[in-house]
Image 1: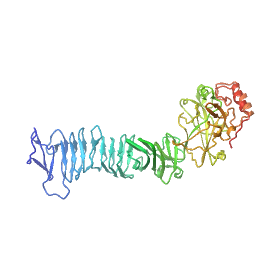
Image 2: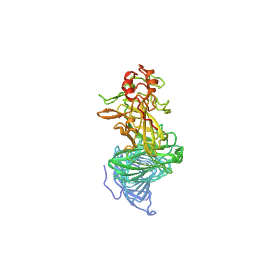
Image 3: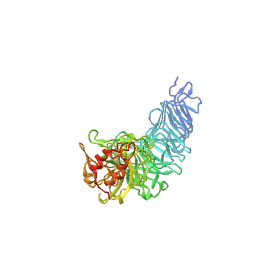
Image 4: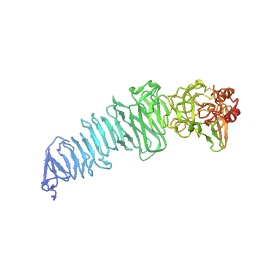
Length: 588
C-alpha cells in the first residue's frame, strides 16, 4: 500500500519542496523533509500546510496525512486549522511557526515545540493525562479571546492577546510565564507554575483572574519568593498581586501554594463594618509542612477601601481570626505559619480562654461543669424566663452590653451558659481598668471550661479590636463574681491569645479574694457563686433581692439559681451563698 520514499516525488508549497510517502496513489507525506527551492528573503518563507489528520487525504492540496512531521524551517505560517491525531508535530529549535487557526491535539497526538509556536486561535488538547507540549516557547497572540483547554504542560508560555485567554483545563508551566498583554481567566481549573518557573509582566491589562473555584498555584522546591500576578475584572479591572517569601518549611512532592481573590468584602459578616476592604485573598497549600514561615504582601487599590485606609490592618479571617501589621500605603503585610483568607480590616484578635463556675462544677465524678440548665430549658428569646436565651443575656444592668450575638439553630453541644468577655489593656493588671476596655463579646462557656464562639468550637473572636498594650481579659457571668487575668495574656502559635484561669489562685487578679478552689484532683480554681446582682460582692442584697423572691422557683433562667440546675432551692443558699458571704473583689 505504501510506496517507498522517492526523490522525484514531491510537491512545492510557497517555495518549499516537500518529500514523503504516497498512499493508494495519493501523495501523502508521512515524514516531511523540507528544502528551500527558490530564493526568499532571509529567515522567512510561508508554508500553507493545513489540517493534520491521520485518515488520509480527502482534498489533495489542502489535507495532509501526518504520522510525524518535523518542521526545520526558520519562519513560516500555517493558515488552516491543525488536527494532530496519533502522531507528532515537531517544531525544531530554530523554527518560528505561526498558526492562524485552531490547533487540536486529539487523543494519542503530540505537539513537540522545540522552537517557537505562535497561536492565533484556540488550543485544544484531548489527551486524558497531562501532556507536554515541548521545551520551547508557545505564544498566544490572537486578536479575539482564545481558549486553552485540556491538560497542557508548557515549558515557556507568553500571553500577548489584549482580548484575553480563557483556560478551561488544568495547565502547568515549567519555565517562563510571561504576561505581556492580556488577562488569563480561570474558572474551575488551576494554573500551576513548577518549582523552576518564573512569571513576569503584570498589570491591570495583563494578569491572572480567577472567577470560580480554581487557583493560580506555585510549586516550591525550597524556601524562596514568588509574586502571584493576580487581579479581578469586577467592574473596573483591578490588579492586586500577592508576593510570598518562604523562609521556612518542608516542601513535599507535588506541593503548591494557591491564590485566588474576590473583589468583595470578606464572607465573615462581622468584618464588613467600620474600616475594611472590598477585597479578600484566599491562600491554600498542599504538602507544605514543618516549621512554615512565610512573609506575605497583599496589594490593594484605593477603590477597595471602605472607611479610612490608615486604620486598616492585615487580618486573617479563617479559621482563626488574627491581626497582623498595619497597612502601609496600599499594602498589607504579615508573616504567617498557615494559610487561609486574608483581607484588610480594623484590628481583630481571637481569645482562647478557660475558666470554671463554682455553682455547676462537679468535683466528685465528672470533674467538670453540669449543663443541666442549658439542656432542660427550651432555646428561645431572653425576654421569656422559661427559655434558655438564644440571644446574649447581658444587655441589661450592670453590663449594658449592646452586642447582637444570637443563635438560630440548636444550641451547640456541652454548653453550660453564656458569659461576657471584655478585653482590657495596660502596662500591668493593676492599671488595666474599666477605662481601658477596648472590646467586649458574649460567648458560650462549655463543660470543660473553654469559652467559645457561637459555633461552639472556635475561640472567641473580637472584631475591630486593636491591641496596643498588654492584654488582661475579664470574664463576667450573670451570678458569679467576675475575674481578671493577673498576668499579661500572650499570643500562641495559632495566633490565639490563650489563658487558663483555673490552674491556681495566682492566675486571677486579687488572688484568693477573686477565685475559689473548687477541686483538689485535679486542682482547679473557679469563679465565686452567689453574686446574684453581678457587682463582684456577695452581700445581703444578693439574698434579699434575688434569692428570697425566687425561692422555690424552677424551670426558669434566674439569677438566684447559683448552681444552674434549673431550680432555686435551699442548696443554692446553703452550698453557695452562705460559704461565700462577704466575699468581695471589685474590679476597678
